[in-house]
Each structure stands twice: as C-alpha cells, then as structure tokens.
Image: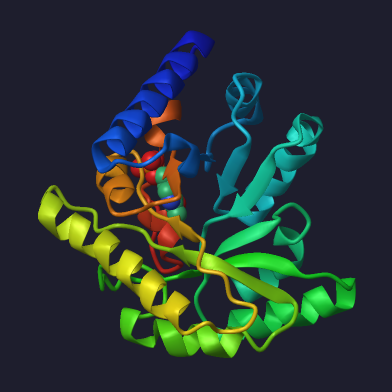
Length: 246
Ligand SMILES: *Cc1c(COP(=O)(O)O)cnc(C)c1O
C-alpha cells in the first residue's frame, strides 16, 4: 500500500475519533490510537510512526520481535494484544511494556515468575470476554472482579484497566452492549479500591466499531484494517489457537 494511502487513512481515523469524542462530550486527548499491526510489515508501520503515531499492538511474539528490532529507534510504545501462550512470555517481555490480554491465572503465574527473574514489573490490562463468544479469549464478566483481586496480589503486575474485543456483528446494539458492560465493570471494580489496582484504561473498539467504543468510554482504540488495509489471515487465526488457516 502506498504511503499516501496510509497517511490518508490515519487522518480519517483521527477524524472519526474526534467526531465520536465530540458527540460524547469527551476530549480526544483521552482516547489513544493503538495501531493493530499484525501481518503489517515494518516499512508500513514506519510510515505511521513518522506521521506521529506512538502506540503499537502486536498479536504474535515471534512476528513482533523482528519488527521491534527494525523499528526500535522510532521509540514507540509496544503492547501485546494477542492470546498469550505461556511458553511465549519470555519473548513478549522483550518488547512489550504492557500486556492487554491477561485472562487466566496460569498466565499470571508465568508472567510473575519471569518478571521476578528479570527483577521488574509490568503493566497489564485484564481481557474480558464481554460478547460471550466461545471463539474469544478473556475472563467471563462475572469472574472479572474476583480475578482482578487475585492478580492484585502479585507485586510484579500492575493492573491499569480492562480490555475487550467487541462482538463481530453488524448489529450495533449488541456490539455496544459489550462495550457498556466493560465500562460498568471498570466502575464496579474501581469502587472496590483494591490496593495497587488502577482502573484507568478501557481498551475497546476497532476499525468497524470505534465510535461506539468511544461513546462508552474507551481510552484506547485498536485499529488495523482501516489504516493498513485488509489482512490475509482471518482474525480467528489470532484469537483462537484451534483455528486453522485454510
Ligand atoms: C486485529 C486486532 C484489532 C484491530 O482490528 P481491525 O478490525 O483490523 O481494526 C484490534 N484488537 C485486536 C486484539 C486485534 O487482534
């Protein structure tokens, strides 16, 4: 894809975010754009970084590491947003300063072990499966509070908020319900005042549904296709280990 197209797409996304913020009576300063860069080569990401973008989200440890090395100089912030297998924790910690997809104790234990070994801590978001789709990862909404309480006991992990992948549906009402659920979970959890837990971030909204996410309080929208064009692999490849790429 041409440089001009990527720049035009970026401009369009920022205008969409600004319009959605205006309609929701929010400041666009409070909504960060995360570039969802799975399958996107480093040269294209570079174009977005030169245009002033600062936040990158990757789904696969191996793919991300190579790009991270290439783009290191640009000084962007790298998040991990994919399903994190425990045997990839070490690799992910080489580039990610925040993992958005923490969703089970097995992963929490592995992160903690590795972080203790490295003598450092990590910012995380708890991924919640607000759409109840089996294909999606994330903790069930009813279990989110108990999970946060448990994770809060680990000194190496600093919970900064919640993340969800919206329902992939053309029915706006249904999609929006999921975002509203995440937003209300954040409020409920924040009210508990759990030591060490911040409920600052709500990472939700993608190319197709970012307006609804902003309306429901997103502080971070994760956009890929609308900036870099369509991907070759279906999203299920990134969200479900069992998914087969045909
Ligand atoms: C791919 C991906 C996105 C971006 O999706 P688009 O529809 O391409 O904007 C957002 N979040 C996660 C977790 C993703 O894997």
